[in-house]
Amino acid sequence: MKNNFKKKLIEIARWVNIEIEENNAAKYEQYRNEIEIWNKKVNLTSVKDEEEFMVKHIIDSLMVLKMIEIPFGVKIIDIGTGAGFPGIPIKISRRDLEIYLLDSNKKKTIFLENTIKNLGLKETYVLCGRAENYGKNMQFREKYDYAFARAVSALNVLLELCLPFVKLGGFFVALKGKEPEEEIVQSRGVFEILGGRLEDVIYYELPIGIKRSLVVVEKVGKTPIEYPRREGIPEKKPLFMK
Ligand SMILES: C[S@@+](CC[C@H](N)C(=O)[O-])C[C@H]1O[C@@H](n2cnc3c(N)ncnc32)[C@H](O)[C@@H]1O
Image 1 (tube, rainbow, N blue to C red):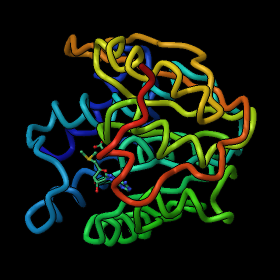
Image 2: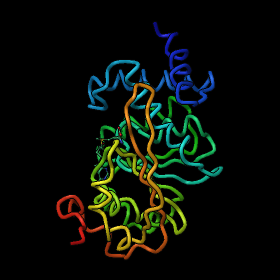
Image 3: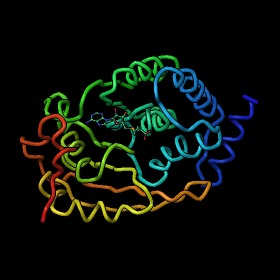
Image 4: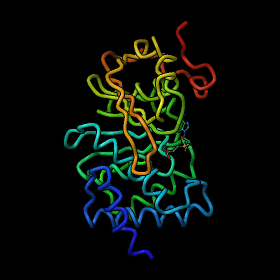
């Protein structure tokens, strides 16, 4: 029954010490309903089960707020946001944040525009296009306090796509699986090339025992202007140190 959604979400979130307010739970329900409707025509998620949706999409996104102290009112970009993860759940819980949702898939960005309007989320903006192109545009380059990315690419590729957006002193946070170590080793030297420094790896567990991690990278130097390379190259020829 629909009314159970809010109660169930609040309860599941409490298993991992996340407190969801009743009115925000209603927003999450509305968001889920939007996804369900649009999923018939746009491939937004393969997660159909309600509880799985709560855990793998909503709670997993909110874990970022639980694990990292994000200051009031900062500017965030979610790169390869898809249906809005982690950006939209983060915005629902933290209305003070200014959120940019970037994705290259036009249909997904139409869904996002529509959903933001229906949910009444302020200071939430949708960018349609490739991270490689936006990252070269001075209007967006080194303008964000935080960049997030979940399920987009391997870490060495993500560093090239995401670090250009981050201000000096800001952070790029990659939402990764339970064993990010191999990707971190593969990214050795790449952090430095792009002006990053591996700050922390945070491990956590979702309510149904799924293990995940956050790779936190601080922006300590400017990203050289030749990065990101042109569209498709970061993925095709990831930066790699021998
Ligand atoms: C597997 S989905 C993940 C979506 C969401 N972050 C999540 O965790 O559910 C990856 C998304 O990244 C987008 N994407 C991949 N490469 C991109 C790029 N270079 N620039 C912008 N978006 C990109 C795709 O269009 C897709 O929507």
